[in-house]
Length: 282
Image (cartoon, rainbow, N blue to C red; front, side, top):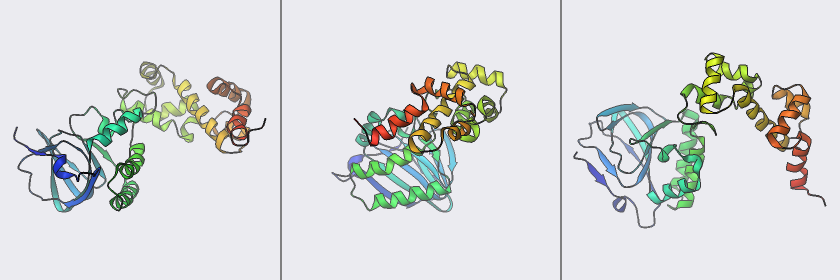
């Protein structure tokens, strides 16, 4: 298939790790798709943008992000007036280096298995934050340090399956596992988790055992104990208050679950991660 090929040697200066640019898009359909030998992050700053790919097209709205990898054929077209995008072209070595250091990025953004550009979305508040960070990057030297300082907060904020949840799990289960990290969900125990799925309890239990190897109750208790550990480490809140906020007003049961999860009683855990760490005594 005929297409246009863009090269990093033409796009980047010899010492540049990135190039950031803004463009108002032509409303004519691109005559040819194009590919490139570098990575590119594009987001819709204003208006509607049509993404053309081989045999398909889709419209993108303000706040949509495109993570484009080398050799992915694509083309952009403005739809209506003042369709504007921000483009961040990135040398391949930067993305390879970040991925090799952070396994948590597997399946996310540039590190997915997609043969087409991956699309994500930022809401208006997140888009404002992204644009402010882009302005800071624009004023910085075009070096890897400043590029990574821009990319990392964005990558961390992208939606991804919670730790331990297979990307192959149903979307409703992934969404419920993400919701289970919220106090309002895990405080209500397994019933709160099942309610977040919108499915019947037996079906939820079977699906969780298949994809996670645990029951809804087990998973919720893991979230409770992670939350309790953070509260014990980061605050001086009374133990009874933390237990109640976890949905476990029975302190004996709370102690048992915490000891099982962390190998220490709540009191010993707090001392080890507060006093003994910050002001150790002989």
